[in-house]
Image (cartoon, rainbow, N blue to C red; front, side):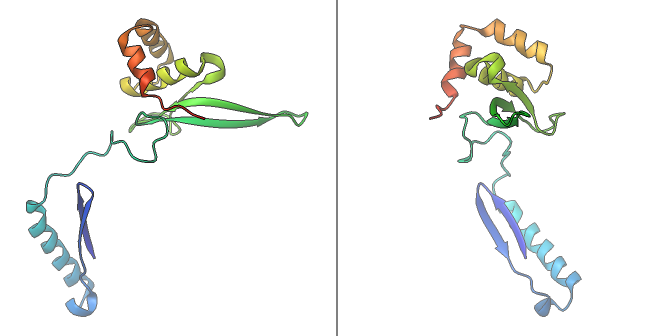
Length: 149
């Protein structure tokens, strides 16, 4: 089977070995089909910054991260973080900004700025937040955040 997708529409064709006689012949027919159909299709989309229904924060690449800790006494605590992630982020889990340290709005803004700048240098991100605090850009970032119930 050969498949190609453009702008969320899939195109596919089957190339059974029984019909073509061998795997190599079926693969060659599939490649010919792809070469014939590809020029008539629109160019591929870049899905890196595309909003999907799975997004829960309102900003691509930003999500609320929950971490549970249990103390030796048995008490359990929940820690919330706004997490920024992007392609080529040096940390596999992204960069987290704790809500208990920065507050909900500031942690969210820091995560958005972190992703926007594609930087994991915390002092620079904190300085950037201080530079935009109270400006229309700061308010625009906060308006993007979906409200959690």
